[in-house]
Image (cartoon, rainbow, N blue to C red; front, side, top):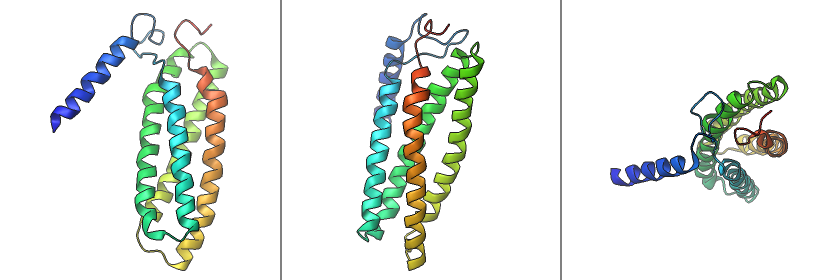
Amino acid sequence: MFGFFRRRKQQAEVRDEAESGPETTAPGTEIRYHENLVPELLEDHQTLLALFEKVSQAHEAGEFQQLPSMLEEFGSLLRGHLLKENVRLYIYLQHALANDPDNSALMQGFRTEMHGISKVVNRFLRHYGQTEWDQQRREDFASELKAIGEVLVKRIETEEKVLYPLYMPPGSYS
């Protein structure tokens, strides 16, 4: 069983080594640039949005028994995406943009805002991850789901248009 995890780790290390080199780290660090990071993050967004739509459809269809497991899956995917952003995107940008105060502040604003959004979403997921669905919970869920959906869609659009273009190979920053 653990052989699977070791193989996955070794494959990731080989992939990292292939992507790394003296020209692929953030200035003054060993933090590597990953050319596939933005496409991976974009794919995560599409997966998250599709699952969010399925949650919404299940709620509209009255399939409340399916919602806790769907919300758990959504939460797991979201946490994985946020971890990837924190470890691979934000830390790299923090160093790469060290001499660009405007874009550095912009990136830090994104990071801070996402921290707040993730707290609200995690609270929502914990609250509605329960299996009991009385009428009040059903009504509250609909309005909260709509609000969270609007925030997530706006955030995804902004990340893709403003934040992700800041992620460039070393040497691209002036």
